Amino acid sequence: MQKPILIGGLGLSLGLALLGRWQASVFDLGEYIFWGAIAVGGLMLWRQNQPQLALDDPTSPLQKKDVNQAIANAQQWIEALQTESPEQNFSTFTNTLTALNDQFSRTALTAVVTGGRGTGKTTVLKQLAALNLRCEFTETDPLFTDLASYDQAAQNQVFAADLVIFLVNGDLMASQWDTLKHWLQARQKLIIVFNKQDQYQSEQRELILEQLRKHVYPAIIATDVMAIAAAPQATKVKQIQTDGTTTEYFEQPIPQLTGLQTHLQTLFGSEATKQQLVWSTIWRTATLIQHNAKQQLNTLRRQRAMPILEKYQWLAAGATFANPVAALDLLATAAVTGQMIMDVGSIYQQKISLSQAQAIATAIGKQMIQLGLVELSTQAVGGILKTNAITYVAGGAVQGVSAAYLTHIAGLSLMQYFQEQDPHTQGENLNFDQLGRILKGVFENNRRSQFLQTFTTGTLKRLSPQTIR
Image 1: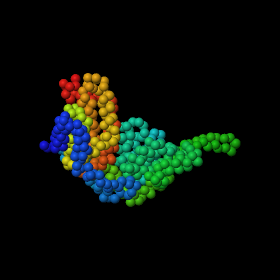
Image 2: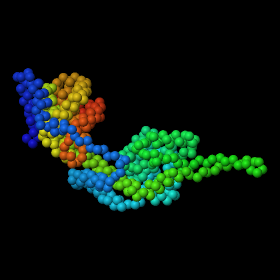
Image 3: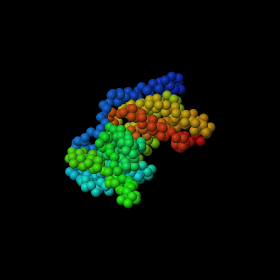
Image 4: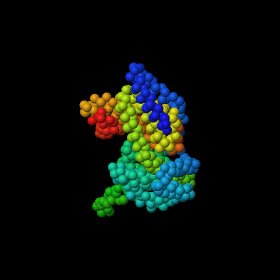
């Protein structure tokens, strides 16, 4: 009696199956109950227009309250993690978060020089370090090398720095711009530097610089995109001597970093700009701590939720296999799904009521039908079972395996949906559009033939060994 949806739904399904022996209209009755009674009082709770949260604008100045809120959000996730897993040590998170409060008074700045191979990072770093700009400069390993460990280490350096100087030797590639947009969204201050401009003709230099500025605007303003020559190529010089002979030699031009130097001096000379750079780094660090704590918490919750999901998918298979009537399949599966929603929701600290669970179960069932998932799963399972004629003639096998599979998909979708929510939403304001998108994506990721074959075999072992052998 502690699981009212499950007991009531399965009991009603069994009763209707018995009634079907004497009343031919049971199919219509069962379907009516599924789409009607099980949704009473719940579905409208989330059909109201939900307020659209304003997206964070990475180009707008940060306020100190925004930074403090990021720290508070990270603290919430750490506390949730500590509460649900008290036996583990999360001192790395707490110590890093505590140290952020001391960063507000920091006056020293850090900058990182980064870019792909052959862009002149080391040379630029040496030139900048010699300029005494009151900033500590470091260099990352080359980006875009197809070495994940290199890129991850470089990105960690980028996120920890107050300023990023990104070097290119020409216009940006799409993959480079995607990376830069990710950094900008993380409130990273970027300066795009076209190095080695001396290797191009004057007209080409201007064209490349113009293309760069157009490519990144308005995310990056024109003054943050400039051209330099950190190590200009030596030029051949001919000199005619007094006796008429000609001598040739190579002359090394001086580095052309004046524009970059002036721009950095302007940035570092503004107290307001320095404050924004420091605050952005604190905000970014707090957000990263929140992300990592959330990932750990979701991993922990997923480990606890998977056995619950598996229990209900086998229950759905057994209930449907025992009563392979289309309308009653829906009723039994909805009952199982509804109870699974409440149990999985409790793992994710989502306080879902009975009526809310009914509404979610109904919505998931409708979306599965609208997306064609029910038909696709039945066809796929049927195709697998056809390889075994004895198995296939067992009328409830296809329905039983399909019910287990769809319950599995629904459970995975709910878990992913809950993972994306704030830890203190308590099941409020369910977003059915987001849930539908997740449902479709999870189905696509779990319809591989090998997975279905393994899943079908495992489900059949759970069903009656006397009937399916």
